[in-house]
Length: 216
Image (cartoon, rainbow, N blue to C red):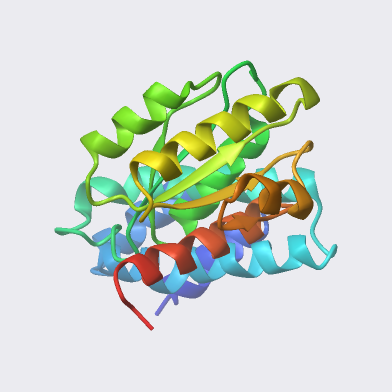
């Protein structure tokens, strides 16, 4: 019998964008639960890809290809997921700060968050502090925000957004990332974390989500 879980892992790690949807569909037709395809196949595969990315054995083109493959497979199983099958690790808000229209890094973070079992609320690019705060009010179960900035000219926006979120909602965890960000700046503006790549960002935000829920 076909080991569909291992096949799903392999297809993601080999970036089989054309074949992943049909494989996932066949797996479900043969009785494999959608939750198992996600939690035992897709998530471990993306965690492995993310670890390789952090260790410089997987590079940006491969990371993007794996993320797109995973996303296509995920789109296929979403209608079959029961209850909160995809929300087992919480929700996070992500967005590129006001004045910045770069979104590749932010998009990767959103996909990696989804690939590790979280639901990303993606606000897009050029997002103001008001939009971040409104999103938090609209999603009171979210206690984690990821801010992306790829332009030196938007460091000020990142600082202002982070400090307004902290002033209004001090229990919210904030992670920053992007080409212009670093640990020194994170310490300066008082956020909870800085990560240099999308895999690390997803991992840190998952840890923040677990802390917010009181999970050890």
